[in-house]
Amino acid sequence: MKHLLSLETLPQAQMERILSAGVEIKSHRGRHESQPLKGQTWVLIFSKSSTRTRVSFEVGIRELGGQVMFLNASDIQLGRGEPIKDTARVLGRMIHGAVIRTYAQKDVEEFAQFSEVPTINALTDDEHPCQILTDIFTYQEKRGSIRGKVVTFVGDAACNVAQSWIFAAAKLGFELRLAAPEKFQPSAAVLSRAGGKITCTSDLRAAARGADLLYTDVWVSMGKETESQDRIRQLTGYQINQSLIQLAKPDALIMHCLPAYRGKEIDDQTFEAHAQTIFDQAENRLHVQKAILEWILE
Image: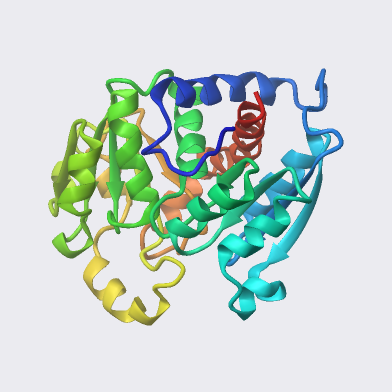
């Protein structure tokens, strides 16, 4: 049985298989020859709010022939303290697969273990594997293979999105530069586990020079709201704007996983100038999510 719980544990060959399948899935949308989820019911269990992840999985499951149930964790017994392993053992007898968006990585892993149904990590505090697979898919759709390229991540480089980029870098052979204040850089343990060509620096301009892709995410991730003022103070200046873009390669892509807080991690002018790429990136969540679902059932 397959799960997608982390890019750290996803083999390179499987990652490339998902990315390759996404190309055909996108080109054949609305003309599917088969519906691999026909007769199946999948559940979305979300403890965190979502727009792109929820909609792309709900639409994707339906387009592949399945039925989908959305469960907010506060509406089921999980919200009243039922252990995740008990919820998993109940649902596992009724559903065919689960997509989970929550706080603790161990909760997704425990659900997969005890439910014994295919389980997908739709975001935890540690990783956001579906997002980064989509980001890489989008880069390759527009610029060709990401292997040998330079990706510069700007902002909170200790967040879940940055951590999934870290685990993808060595497997797909690209250089990753993380531009962040020291407090917002990933731990030495994570970097050691990942390997690959990864640089952490507080020198934003140095990190941007010659980059093929400039990428950013919000400064205040979900669950970090109480730290908002301190995070904004320390991360101010770690912004993608026109002066930073001039340091990257002339054809560098600008990407943001959304939602975007204009004037903070990216300025409004830059966002609008690169909106086509950013919203292509958002659309591609659907196609890559469908590739993940098909892969997990092979």
